[in-house]
Image (cartoon, rainbow over all chains, first blue to last red; front, side, top):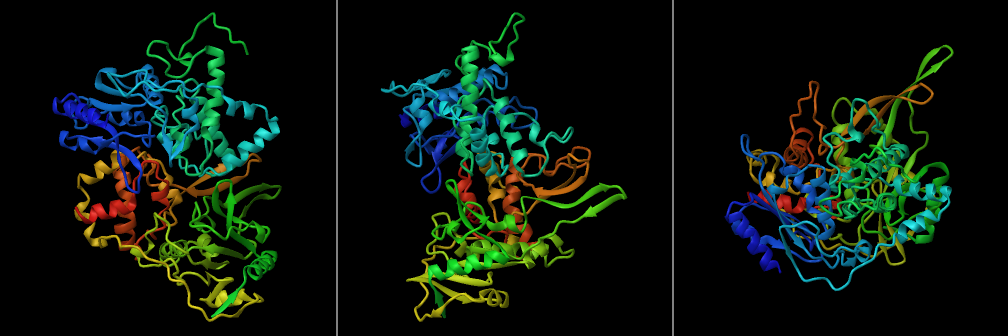
Length: 282
Length: 326
């Protein structure tokens, strides 16, 4: 399949349909990393396998602006897995990217592996085919997971005191490097609450209360917007189970609005919609 | 040389911890970090490299420089200071060298940083030689070695039946006190080195400043602060005043990162390094060009933490090779 991906990327670059093609390449020490291909002759750098975990949609923000003054913003090509495609839908709904400026190659997915380990989120994943694409590649996957929120349920069964102790222990390790936020396609504010100077919502101290505030705030800001791609958790150097927090909120949103982030191109996100007659079963 | 057994070593550390703060590698969930230890049984002795360096005990991620307290007779200013002497046990040679690198700025340049100076002064360093280089390590390219004893007060090397003990400084000799040791006549194990990376001289860096390489490297950078906060030699900080809930004032000093957007923003809103390319490039220029020119040592010790943890594989070893080949 990689031959088809490279051929399509070469064609797009040669025709001038895109200025840059965002995919994956072999990194150092057996790792895979995001690749940015600008020249047709470089497409052979591109690879595709189960180590390709990054959600490349995060890089679309940097192509919103012209590469040179006076030019139009560049058109880009991008590879998306099914979970990434839901992030893409979120960004399209939120008018962060123009669909016409994108050429999306959707890849069917059997789940990715981190350090050779299959990911829990992939085993639960019920979307094996991307939801938005210009061209889809890959075989129809054999197995489809089922979302049961079993991990969230485990957390819900704890008493409030136990849960607080659990999260205190987890957040205490946070070093406020913001890798979670930076790896997240849905975190694109020009100025994050965490760094806003006026008013200064958060202090610079790396104490537990600031860390808790940051993570809870970020989780709430992702309500109905988190596609569950796991990029935050994978980027975290301190191995904090951030997706548990996001998944708890995703579960609530699903129960309240029957909506999953980026589920399709048509349905507007519930928290960006207001109906006068709306009543929430709270 | 003398050697001690594991049991004697741990008993001695327990003794030390009664009068001093003992900081040692500890398992924190899945990670190994330096933490204050209550009992020697909490110490992890078999580890490659700790997930975080010991930097935070000399340049804390957060500390209060002083507080202004309101009382009946007006205001008073309190300056917190370290109450106890400290021992950092299990320091790897790279993390020890990193303190020497920080010394060049905080101790050897005027004005001396009094907070850093006090922490250095009141701390004795017990090194633990590496048995092997971890996959990402490249300390040998930076003029040190996995068993380098030159930056600690006492150096321990794991040998059959215990640890060989090298006394490096007077501070180390004093600390040794009642540690039970026996004469030991073996030879210290040699750690296999690694092919050296090509590192350009500081003077050779400016010619590559405008090379297109930096923009291509920065394409995938997420502009987070991870590499700088895991780095044993990154030392930028921010200082701000805060009101506490009981209306006192605290002047807080906390880590900051040159990779963060807005780090260089100045009055009026201008930012001399507005793009992530400029910020990422600065990280490498700071380490290999500016810092050596201004203060002497290269601000990298080859610990490999940034390589191990960067989510998008910005690999400093690869960068050094690429820059040397530009």
